[in-house]
Every structure is written in structure tokens, then in C-alpha cells.
Length: 233
Image (tube, rainbow, N blue to C red; front, side, top):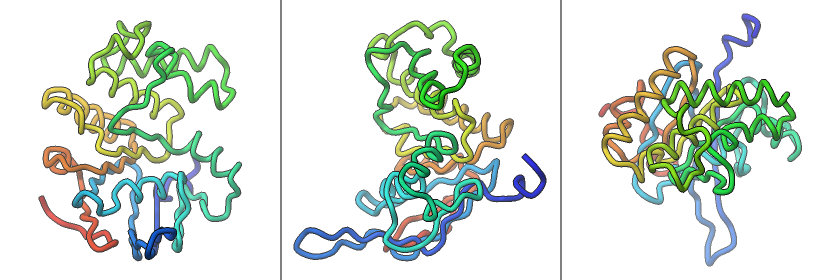
């Protein structure tokens, strides 16, 4: 990464709007939301259920297209890419962590973490080494050969985080990642986020209802009336 690239934000969205059409009347979810996340920052997005937090993350990660506005990830303009280009950018530059972790049940923890490397066509030996290193960092080296059904909820979520970090993404997007975890497992997950934020300068956006998650963030944005507003917790 050269000096110019290092100064680019990991993620930036301007004037983001999203309106769903198809029911009795259009539903406006976002109306001019702005967010800028530099490398090494953890931003929490809070808001009532149905306020649009998941929609926001889907747009930021290129899983859906906005009605209006622009999104750049690591300096790449999502709006300028066709579907193939967006898919390639997602696989290499965006890491997703969901509430229900979405691990593939027929694969081991190691294989689940290796999956992004396989999809990207990375050398198998390097992919395995990276996956084992991540599992080790997250305290799961001894669980590498276990399938998701043999892991606790907290362990499954850590595997999901390792998978999301496999390609060293510009931005990590987490949607209610502690929603199904007990307090201890949630605390462990927050420690992991903080470690990668501080040591790897990983940029992270977390949508959450959990006040402990919000308090751990360097910045908190409230999604209200379709816009993002900075608040203090």
C-alpha cells in the first residue's frame, strides 16, 4: 500500500438513500446518510428495530444498490462497478459477520475459514496457513477440525470472524454480532474486535442494540429518520 492509498478511508458513503418500491406505497429507509471510516476505527451504529441498520450494512458491503448516493471501499467506487466487479470487491475487500454466523455445517472450522481463499483462487498452502493463524489468534486452534455443530455459539461466532478477516478486508461489517451470545462470549468477541482494530488497523462498523458494544466503539452513530447522527453513550 502506497502513501496515497494509506490515506484513503477504508469506507466512505455520501448522501446514501434507499427506497423500497413494491408494496402499497414506497418505503424510504435511508435518506441522505453519510459515513466515513478510516483504518483503525471501530464505529457502532445504533437505532431502533426497523430503522435500517441492516439495510445500511448491506449497501455499504455492496450486497444491495442504493437508490441514491455514493459508496467507496478502499478507494473503489461501488457505483462504477458491474455485478462481477462488485462481487470481486466484496470477496477481497469486505468482511461480513452476521448475528447467525452462517457457517457451512458440512465443513470444519478450518475449512470454513479457508473458504474465502478458495473462492479467490489463492494457493492452498497459503490459504491453510492464514486460516490456522487466524484460528490461533482467536483461541480456536484446537477446534480447527470440529464442525460448527460441535462448537459453542461463541466459538462459532469467532470462526465467522476469522472467516471474515481471511482476505484482510478494507472494512469489516458486523450486523448484531453479539445478538445470540451470552455476556462472556460477547465480551470475548469485543476483545477480538479491539485487538484487530488496534494492532491490524482494521476498520470495523458494527450495527448493534447492545450497549456494551456501543461503549466499546470509538464513535457511535444513531440511525434516525434515515440519517446517521453522532451521539455519546
